[in-house]
Length: 69
Image (cartoon, rainbow, N blue to C red):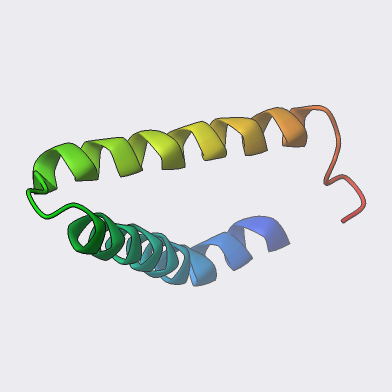
């Protein structure tokens, strides 16, 4: 196993925890800001925004933006 995969194995749980923290923080904001909030709909919209952000990051990775980060 190479160094990147070892680091990935070490960090993937922490990365998931961080993603869940961001998701839950945004769920709270939706709930505070929208009195009649539909939690499931809000969750789907937040996930969509997160997926769009991930897709932009993927594009940046493929264009070499992080090659020498």
